Image (cartoon, rainbow, N blue to C red; front, side, top):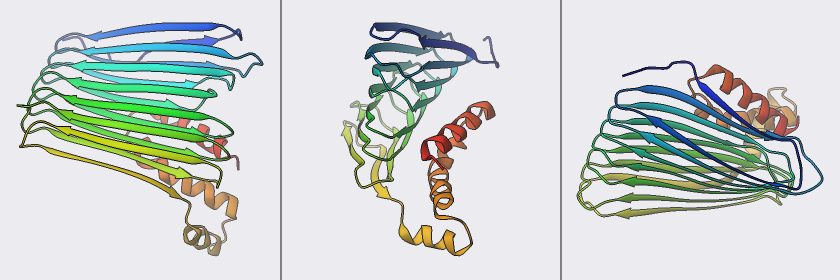
Length: 273
């Protein structure tokens, strides 16, 4: 029943190029306890390529609560592979945020397995790729028991020659009635050379559920830019406002002002105006 309001923080900092780094984190929140954990991965860009592999396991026991935030800002020399998997017990609650900004290549696999009745998983993601960055996200929401809920929203922006791939799976076991699952991936493409591919999937084994998914890839509308320019806002600033507005619904769902401020600054820097 212990409740820890201040976040635990872990930092992985790469200071040497041309090497491989492997990390494994296990976070267990016992029954009726509550915790908040922040993971940060970062480095400067170096000349030699570096390989990183991280595994994060989140175990949320019955009636426990966990908030988990991961911020990845590796240098452009890094090839990054990350797996985050969580298991939730009865009446457990997980609220997670995945932020992907750095590396040359990133492959993220992120999933929640709801193994207890009335478990709730909220999974948010923000990514912004530029230059020749390549981000690949795969998510899964596994509903094994009835009366479980998952809510996933991943938003990404791409500019220059960047590319992203998203694939998501909602799977509902036979007998997991009254499941409520939502999956949304939205992408904003800011240049002709950038590309985003998105593939949502449903696997439903029960007949009394509410499961929805959606995926969009869009560009900044000329009409929106014209409207802002007609109000005296320069074109570059107008595009910046549109990108900030695109991410705002996810940022507003983050309960920590410090992380909100960091993301606002990082997004502004990526837009480049």
